[in-house]
Length: 309
Image (cartoon, rainbow, N blue to C red; front, side, top):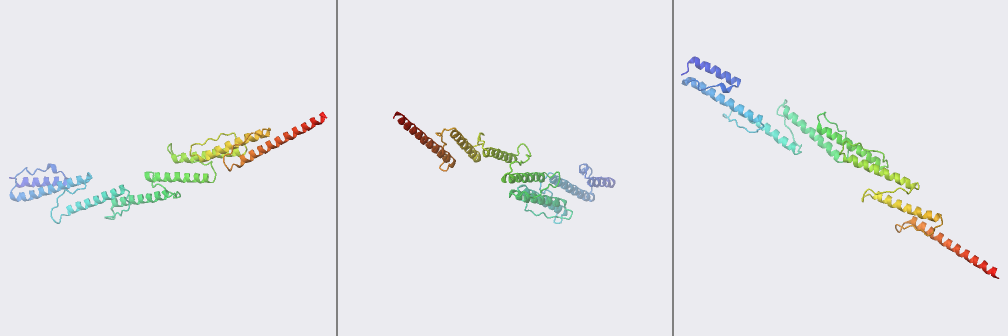
C-alpha cells in the first residue's frame, strides 16, 4: 500500500506529466492505493483518458479526417461541443471548396468571429474567382476593352487572363485593319503554338499577295501565274480565272494587231463582254479584210479584160 509520501510523490509526478502532455510516463500500476487515495487516482485516470482522446481527435483533424471520435462526457461537455463546432466548421469549408472545385461561386461565407482569418481568406478567394468569371464572360462576348490586371506576380490565373485579353485585343485591332484594306498589320505570336496569330498573319499575307497580283493585272501585266491556295480559296480561284481570261484576251488582241483575224477568245459565260467585244472586233476585221480582198480581185479582173481588147 502506498505511503502518504509515495502517494504525494506519485500525484506530483502524474500531474506534471499530464500538464506537460507526457502521458507515456504515467504508471498507475506503480503502487497500490487505499480507498481514499484511489478516488483521486481514478480521477487522474479519467483525466489522462480524456487528454488521450483530445490528442487522438486533434490528430484526426490534422490528417484531414472530418470525424468526431471523442466521446461526450455529459450534457455540459463544453470540450466536446468545441470539437463539434470545429468539425462543423471544417465540413462547411470542405463543402465550400467542393463547390468551388466544380465552378460554383454563388456562395456566401459566414465569418464566425471578427478575427476569423480562414473564412475571410476563403471569401476573398471566391470573390476573386467571381471577378475572373465576370471578366472571362466579357471576353467571351467579344469585348476585349476591359483592362484586366493580375493581382500579383503569383496570380497565375489573372496573368493568364490578362495575356489572353491582350492577345485578343491585338488580334481584334489587326483584323479591323484588314477589314478596311490594310494588309500590312501583323499579330505578334505569343508562342510557337499561337494558332490565332498564325491564322490572322497568314490571312493578311495572302490578301497582300492577292492585292499585289491584282495591281499587276491592273497595270496590264498578266504574266503572273496566280495559284489558288486550296479548293476553298474563292478569291484565289477568281483571280486565277480572271488572269487566265485576260492573258487569253491579250494573246488574241496581239494576233489581231499583226493581222491575224482568225483567233478568238473563248467566252467564259453569257456575260463575258470582253470576249464578245474582241471576237466581234476580230470577226468584223476578218469580214472587212475579205471584202477588201474581193474588191481587189474584182479590180484586177476588170483591168485584165480591158487590156485584151
